View 1 (spheres, one colour):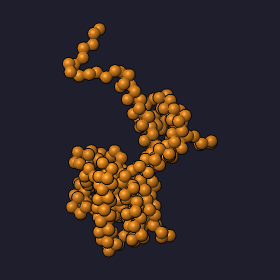
View 2 (cartoon, rainbow, N blue to C red):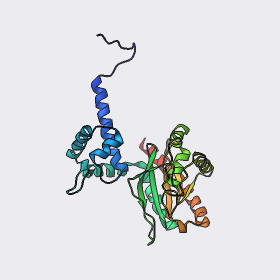
View 3 (tube, one colour):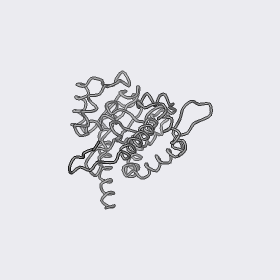
View 4 (cartoon, rainbow, N blue to C red):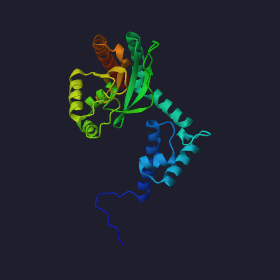
Length: 271
């Protein structure tokens, strides 16, 4: 049988498609470890990604051989290995936003006495990239590298509020699973909250993502004018009084603009 090709369109070899699909599967497996529990087994990965156990097992063994994943004696499942940790550390060192944000977030930590954080946008979620811990005995800390939804908490909502409309709509049309009893889970309520954030340029959360935690966040804009993440001031909710929140609003706005200006200057200097 003769296969006819569409005029003017170059057909990719089947092997290319197969290679692309295989690479995507490997990436999907690694991303599960980035956002999920510390240990994952073959069955759990198979269910989550809809792949056969045989395929998952082959991928895992390949990643273990390259130290991207590892196993521990007496523990069922796989965890991220030293090569993955080295890759992540290298990425953070080379991330422009982290370079320019670090001194500003340290200063913000010293000015407020609370923990300050940097989050990056990853797909339709966010991940903590760095934190500068409060010197206080009672403080809030975050799990760097863990992924969170955009609809819960100030760091996520402020990103969601300033995403392009088509990307925002994708998130809003998904089920909104509550993380605490204060998480906004109805679409209309979340849309109203995002509209207010759009007007104010700042998001506030009191126990929405983590019970007992308060935070104020601002978007992290890149030189391209797009939102790439967020910065926040966070701590125990009882310290986030109306007076403190109002002060933090002004501080986080100024810090956000300063990071944007410095990032733009850094990129201009590299070109």
